Length: 62
Image (tube, rainbow, N blue to C red; front, side):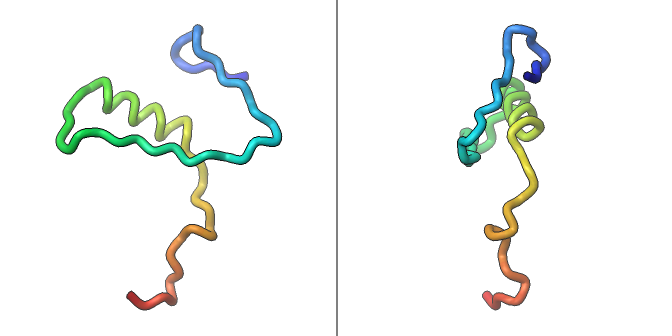
């Protein structure tokens, strides 16, 4: 199990569970340092390589 900057927070791996999509929505122009820190933490710990099936096709005309 991994711990992050806080020793009271721990991750527990979930075996056999499909990955989920995480979305962070904020107010336009929000300059909150707390929101920025949460966004950075989420991007660091919740991102993975993109799914190739979800990438736009380079041969597709728009």
